[in-house]
Image (cartoon, rainbow, N blue to C red):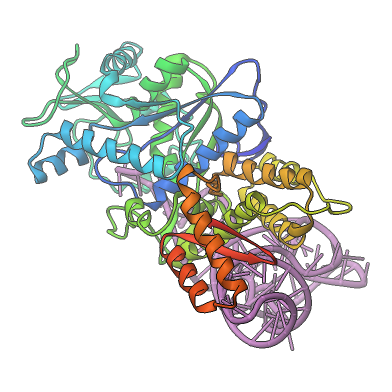
Length: 456
RNA sequence: GGAUAGGUGGCAGAGUGGUUAUGCGUGGGACUGCAGAUCCCAUCUAUUAGGGUUCGAAUCCCUACCUAUCCUCCA
């Protein structure tokens, strides 16, 4: 597959090895609060990437970190007067629940930073010994001058950062561009012991410690939101490569575009977030996924509820078709039946994970199947079902819940009763039954002599 | 100021030199006892502006304008 690599800044062949584990790391959230649709967009995309690679025979280990100690968590815990670890634990559970609702199921391990303190302090120690870091009164800092390539990923030259300075200079630092990797303990804050004093880790070194524990000094894919390129991913590169001496940290860097709302980036600090939990009260995980995957993963999405409504209608078209394929009577067969839909969708994903291209194909497929559906043979029907199954397995944008349960005999008899009424031209009673079924979430559709039904 | 992506119909969003994107919306039709679902036809006569290259430009080049993200909170 070809993928746009943020470091090389062009579309390159992603030559992964099917005989080895593909190591993929994606930056997870700081569990300070509930996640918003911007987070969801990123995690949905990487979920699809992992699912797709696995479907092509790659053994993907998908690792995601969880930042569960951080300034913002501490501040919030003081506001709410709950211990920071409780706040983090609560939000982590919320987060995992939200991901499940979004159908995100490809992550092998969620690594909480606080469980990797030994690895973190070990990395800090190694950086100190090798001269890539130094101690000050308030912590340990990474010495940016020791890593000349700093800024390459984000296209910032190390010198141009001077003019863009907007942080207040820290008296303790040798160079204002240096970033903290260990913060010494402050009163009332959580801390861990270390050879260089009690304290807690800086953000960037959490991720390098976690990835080094699982993957070693380099790995295959590093993903995250585009806003993390600078400084976070630059710092990760600087830390780990300074330690390892290797020429790279990750072989492929993939960044997802931002979700804006009213032409402005959605973020906590701007107070314009729409949380996923709120959205999920009105839209299913598949619908949210479809809305996000309809845009290229690198483009900015301008979020609106209209786009969700549109995705809902689109998703329903697909799931309704599945119900019909499952529940109606097959026909005699269509001549020159068109196949190759899955291959076309795979071709789209092979080309820089073009999910929108795959969805376009799926919509063309839907038009074709819907216009031939009454004539499809059993085999053709199964072929169509397999296409929808693929869309469900890889993209996660089709709800396939047409299988009827054992408690559905009541519905069957109501449908039968209604058809008896219809034969007697007692349409009033027939419509009443239809109305009652609808209230129970059951859709029915008269097709000639027979009637099919499905649950929402 | 620097870096990076863009500016396409009512909306979202493809197309990287020559044929309908696709979806949503809107109008009409078919089907139906009526619905619903679905299909068909149409509509929107789309390419930020101005130059240039070319037989031919949304696509290549130049100029201008505009937007978003990043430049030490961020997915």
